[in-house]
Length: 479
Image 1 (cartoon, one colour):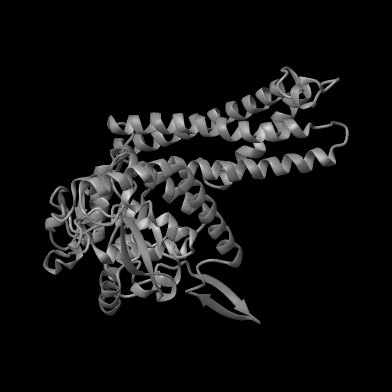
Image 2: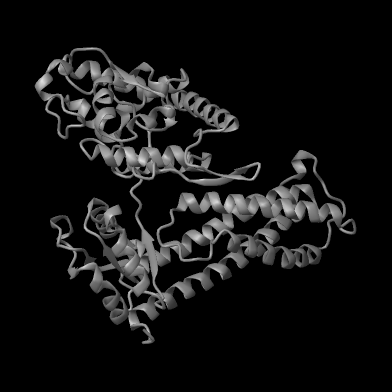
């Protein structure tokens, strides 16, 4: 129990410390540079003179420099309060940008309050706005560079966190598959522990039963254990955690989201009576307003920008095969109401009548036309659904709509399936950007859809849209 950790554990922790230290130094330099560049743009260039915003007597640079020495520690504490100096191996650039924007905006609000109270120094409002933009850009750029260097080191096998998996169910297989697909996350899976070997985990070493895991962790200095056990295995989980007391190891458990309803439970009280909220309305009133306004604005702008492409695609479809340009199909949306969904036609006319070949999300569908293959591969066939968004029948982001026949089937056999209709269906969704599309597991799709519904935020939508764009550029369609 008291043995020192293995060299591998010490190496990964030293790597995490080094990366955190470099990140802090980069943040300090970025914030200071933001102050100096903002001052230079406002007072030492003619950039704002053309707007009539001249400054006869510029305040001394020294005052801004001294002010930055006060602001930098405050912003570092704000970053730390949001755990942005903890190991961030799997963070995406989109998540980092949103977090930086929120924290810098909060920091700027604190600066504005301090400048208002400190009357001896007049803080330029123009510098205030320039500093806000510069700080976001420079801090994000610095962190992007650190993240790139970090992932490059991981791909070369440096500072890897040694991990094991407990369990052999589909979630355990999913963990192994995704970590092997993304070596830049910096995890090395040593193997898995379960009551019996599993064919789906054949690419990992079977290390024994769960009871043997604590001794292995103690001997090999394992950094992290991914736990994916079924509810009936929880007694073994309690024993495992008890036997690992005193060991410096992280436990990360994969919950069965269908069992816990994919919800964030909140404890509240009513006149002293404790209440546990296990389900709530997905969007607040302002959340619905923000989401709808964003959907409408982006859809109208995209239709205007993409109109030449839409005309070209329509011509290609007509030249390639007989039939209409658009494919229309009844789908089920918000509150179970049906609507007509639009797509560019990618199959031969009348293909839907070929009942024997109609399979949900079939790969390499022989009914597709030559142009249709390209439309599906690039997801261009989904663009007409922007019309559905404008009409309020769909959203840019949400669970993908299904046909009535499938909704009737799935609601009978898949728990909580109908809960996905509590929000508008979307052109893209959290399940799609995580690879659950086509003929993949319906249960897993529902799990991701429910997670999205219960954890919605505007930044979450932006993140999904950015990942969708990246997938489209990589020619990995998301439906």
